[in-house]
Every structure is written in C-alpha cells, then in structure tokens.
Length: 75
Image 1 (cartoon, helix red, strand yellow):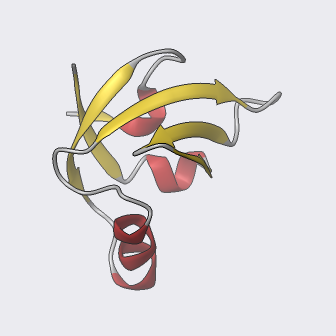
Image 2 (spheres, rainbow, N blue to C red; image 1 turned 90 degrees about the horizontal axis):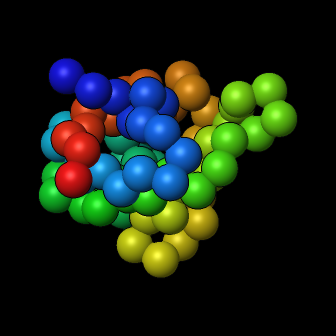
C-alpha cells in the first residue's frame, strides 16, 4: 500500500488509513487526515523534508516520519 510520503508533488490522493497511535493520531485526525479525505501534495522542502500538503483547504507541513504513517490511494 502507498504511503503519503511517497506521493509526487502535484498529485491528489485519498486517505485510506492511519498507522499512528496516541497523541500523534489525535493530531492527524484534528488536521483532517480522516479516511476518505482528499490530500494534495503542494511542495517539498529543500532537502525533501518536510512536505506541504493541502488538506481540506489548509496548508499543513508534515515530516516524512509522520506522513509515512498515512496509507493512501491515488485518485
């Protein structure tokens, strides 16, 4: 299964599942990373980390270690 950190810049993906637990899971859910949410990959940092995502109209930057916990499906 694909993970969010693997998505190409400019692509739009759908969230399938979260592998995170505890406070990190709560934070991701609060950011809008719920099953079925559409996420657009906006840009990556100079070294490839962090990556900026458009999640339900909000620009959110996630590190690769965080975005690797989000299972996705390409739209």
